[in-house]
Image 1 (cartoon, rainbow, N blue to C red):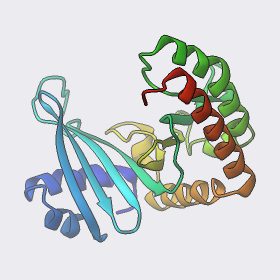
Image 2 (cartoon, one colour):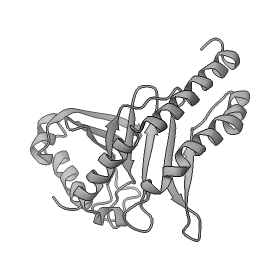
Image 3 (tube, rainbow, N blue to C red):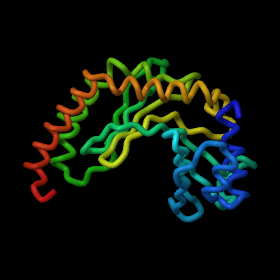
Length: 217
């Protein structure tokens, strides 16, 4: 395998062999830690293949022909690399673009039901998170025009990742080794003492605020 698009074909073969741990080992050639398959919504499964080398393939498998324009579009995936970061509030930070191509940082914390907490996160947490990632966000720039790298951090897990690979998109043309090298580089970069200290301080401050706003947990 040379290109990320080759992994789409491997996912199809993995499916044809029964979508088991043994099938994943045979198809991908990396030691497989576990295979998890769950229903994302009717007609669409989420498939997670975790390898002992800390790489993770997180895929969506469309089981029905509805919405699938041509053969090959039934699979899409992200290649991720597990890292040891943690955050009380899950966040997703990634490189993105303005219309004119200028790179910038996007931080997504998902849906927060508590309106007061949401306001606090928007006014306090996200700006401080941006100040930590802004100096390094260009390192998350993609290999082409519209692809990108990002980092998804929560309580239980954290991963650096490459943008979603679909048939016919530029991500499918990326060299697999180039993507893996960048993922490892970003993982090492996030171990920087200054970055870690800033993220830890932010998380500790957040926990103090949560104790006040959400005393029941």
